[in-house]
Image 1 (cartoon, rainbow, N blue to C red):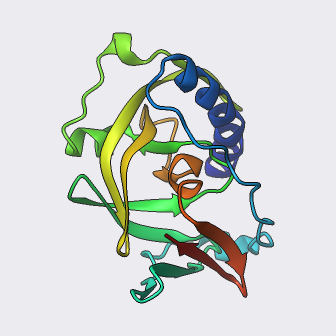
Image 2: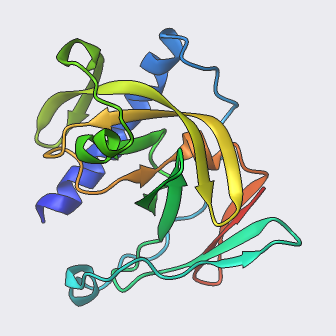
Length: 184
């Protein structure tokens, strides 16, 4: 239950984060596309099941990736960030890519306390995140450079989120036939 509340609150907070990131001139983001319709909520039993990411289907001819739902009903991918493998949940409601502090540390990103300048408001209260820029994010052959992200304390973020600072830079992303389709 805490995880669901945290995600919902993080979605609201990340909308605020984008505005603050723009003020800091980390990078000008292209206008975001409207989010595709949300998939139906998974059943409580499915939400409790924990499963590894489902393998993605890659169509190299078209430069597209098809991501099926996992056992919880979420779209989870194995990505490479600056050459290191990381798991992300696709989140069209998240304005930016969000990393847990422990995963950012694995990338060599260690924000100091003074770097947590972005106020993030969640259902559990306000906290701060550190704006960062990722050199390369790759999902199944789709590659983007200089992706805006934030680092959140581990207790605030239960999993990494692949938000609109990645998705909106693709040619297309959509929910279709129970799957997410990403195309570069």
